Image 1 (spheres, rainbow, N blue to C red):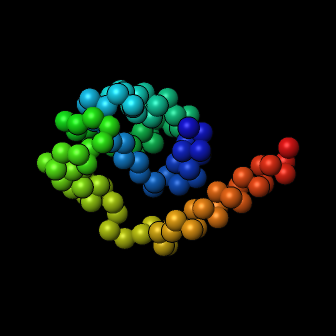
Image 2: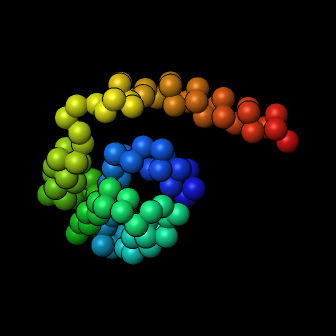
Length: 110
């Protein structure tokens, strides 16, 4: 996850929400914590990472009660005002163009 570590380093106000289900067989319970705790970032930046787990499997939206808890956690986590670094949320097309551009750059570098 070097890209996430890099993003956290260049934007120290960036926050990360890691969510998961206790019974998730696709992404085991402690995998998210393990990955986050092994990011090559300063220890102080670990405070920017928050963890939420639910009585569910991989698809938290299957159980309506869990879905509501997930929704509320994401709503409470999300900033009310965009940061000065990101003045507007990226759209799907922005991300698609960015990924295509990055892929082309890497391909040319070979």
